[in-house]
Length: 233
Ligand code: ADP
Image 1 (cartoon, rainbow, N blue to C red):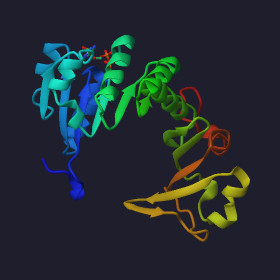
Image 2: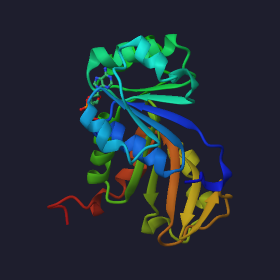
Image 3: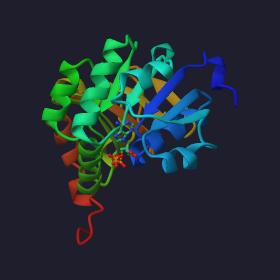
Image 4: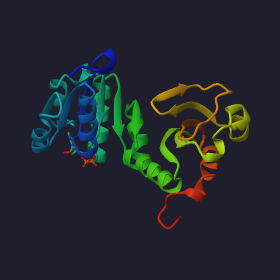
């Protein structure tokens, strides 16, 4: 499989082939990247054999085993081990072995802090993030997606409300009113990046908005009357 749009092929290793690790590994492979899947569980390794470039049985808390995998040569190593101690030890060893970019999965804030201290370049909290997304989606009928940039700041994708249709960004003055920047507008198959102040919203437009959470929530709240929560007509 060749990478899309001529992007250079990157080498990824995903350690821990639980539900999360499998999903990451499979997706990267489908995108055309080279993916090594690693797990202590031989059965999981067998199951993944046809879904990644290579699948290998190894214990990521064993330094020699990691060395033998040539783990240093991978561009990105994802540690998706649920067990606290094993995920911390694996992250530390990968750092010591000189891995360029380590992404580690944390199950709690404290776990995440420790992972950062031992060398994770990026810590991800899939359960917490998914919980936040689901909650926002349940409360706000017009919210499509939600990404936390850093604590307190997010990017939201939401459907333009009826009140916005026919108005320009200048008229709405969202930046002054809510401190919100509209990064892009998705209109059918078209994407208008960094729209001008004279851009007029159309029905069905999808806004990609960035700002402080409390401000975005104010924008989002306007639509609460129409929220698609069961029992909320
Ligand atoms: P999820 O919630 O994503 O399913 P789990 O914690 O259940 O995550 O799965 C993590 C995976 O990590 C399991 O398949 C487990 O076998 C694997 N794993 C645990 N310890 C190690 C280790 N030391 N080296 C490699 N893989 C490990």
